[in-house]
Length: 136
Image 1 (cartoon, rainbow, N blue to C red):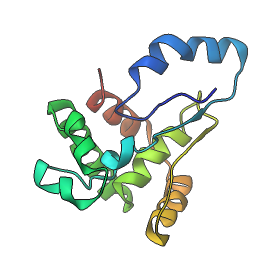
Image 2 (tube, rainbow, N blue to C red; image 1 turned 30 degrees about the horizontal axis):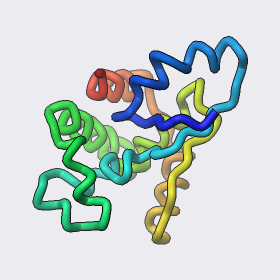
Image 3 (tube, rainbow, N blue to C red; image 1 turned 120 degrees about the horizontal axis):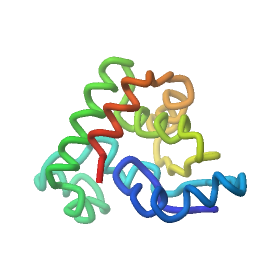
Image 4 (cartoon, rainbow, N blue to C red; image 1 turned 90 degrees about the horizontal axis):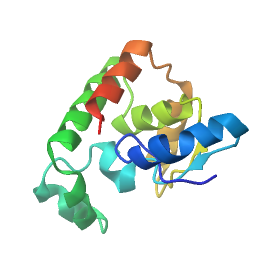
């Protein structure tokens, strides 16, 4: 299965598909792992929309829930000394229903984020913090 699934866009998968995935032991390769770049922390305000061609699409994420999520990602990223994107990807990698997340890279730094994500070990407290911040 290939659903959209990330820390922000998680409701549809969790409510409609995750139980089917578990019952049938299906593999899941999620796309938009970083919510079009929002979960990298690159877009903190409307002033940041000019940072990329995708910037204008970030308006839907700039709300209290998005701000809470970015704050939690920042705190946990600092704790583990990795990027916010690394934490967002680690959350997916460590999610029992996800076989692998899809994330694109356009620079060496972004590829290095994948390495960070694969090596970071999120604690139960980290996961709980992220889940609470991204609650829908």
